[in-house]
Length: 81
Image 1 (tube, rainbow, N blue to C red):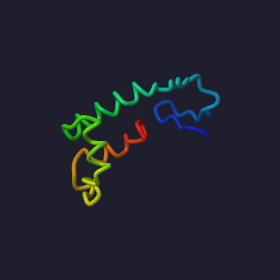
Image 2 (image 1 turned 90 degrees about the horizontal axis):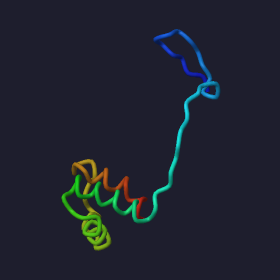
Image 3 (image 1 turned 45 degrees about the vertical axis):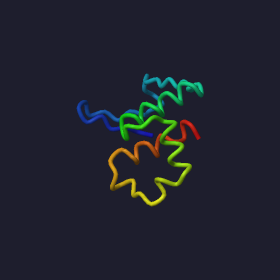
Image 4 (image 1 turned 90 degrees about the vertical axis):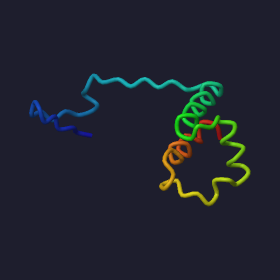
């Protein structure tokens, strides 16, 4: 994959760059804590409260696009499920 660097007028292959990416896997506890933070920020509920409400069907008929924060929470759901 080539990348055009506009500011310097150079085409560089990603493979040629010295960029590095480090990935670390979350423990289940870290993932649950991250999910809880997302839910608390977006919906003012705990992660556990959200999961219970989700399991009870309370979000079945709610459009995530019409409810700020809900889409963020649903995208974070794979952290715990």
